[in-house]
Image 1 (cartoon, rainbow, N blue to C red):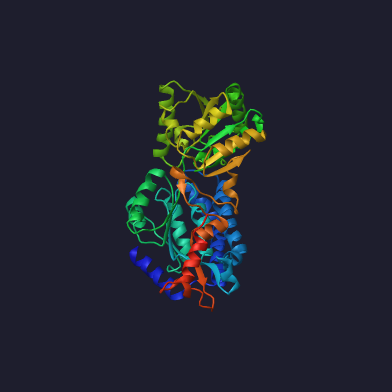
Image 2: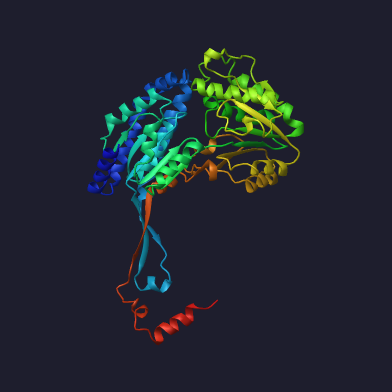
Length: 465
């Protein structure tokens, strides 16, 4: 891996900052790979998960990966432009001085992508990486080996390995990858792993972008349309069977609306999935370890007094790999389901007696990657959005902020650092180099020794309130 990194760095130095045409060509090649291999991608993901919705994969891992690349292609010319800045004091500008920012490629970017959306969470950040003129090395997850192998083969057909390359392997390979002296490192995954990645990157002072997760709350206001809110929330909770970093982790409801909301969630689930067992639209939990983890959450919750309410009558056989959505009532902080990110189709529903109580509940916990608010009360919405710090927000729906090409995507604190998507991704993977060009007049002569009356007059002018 180190040899490959060195070759990419040497190629970047030799070729210099790539032209607009080279950047667009690389973006086009990435788009072409996704278009040409769409069915292969869906097949590989279905095999890796035991079952994964083909249409779901085509939407989330193919179409949703193509659009950021096309967005970058449409806008990269403007993003690359020199950005003029004001000269201060203004008198210098009148004498001919100028200041600006040039956006330079950082060089070689390392991308560590996860198993839940292996193609989307590789190609979506690649839009910013390639638009910014970088080269990249990719380490996909070992938990989706067929998808990782396919990605490696795909990229090798369209890119020289000094432009873009995929490295596969287990956790030890991932640890070694994170310790390489990249010019920037993007990691998407668990907060616990991110601590190790950041520690490894720090040894080489590699700047990092961390896209993590956490327990993203959905606050349902008193005036919310429960039927519509349940449809939209359960879509976010059942997409990829809840194995989504921005999935609503738990819901907060006015106390007297909890039962009605659970009924609405049950109706929404049945409408989307007439059956769970063998349903081609419903995705399986990725492996036995994660299925056991999710069952453990429910066993722990029951043992500590919570009620587990199925949101569907069809409960799949464990051998099916699918897990039917359930609601958990009476959950509390002693339960694992309220301590860990769920990453599955389990929805704790918690009551509140006032919006301030709901805001305080969220704020007493680590800052989430996403926040969802349902309701039309402008004052209540302002209280929720103004009172909670979260990575991103969708109002009256779930997940949609993640799909906006012109909005940055990222967490805050334990849910991540840094952001990408659109121009924000371009800037994340660029070095904003400031440049100042001095006037032809020797305006700094007064600042050079020997000092006399001129500098005294200047200081008298500057040193005042």
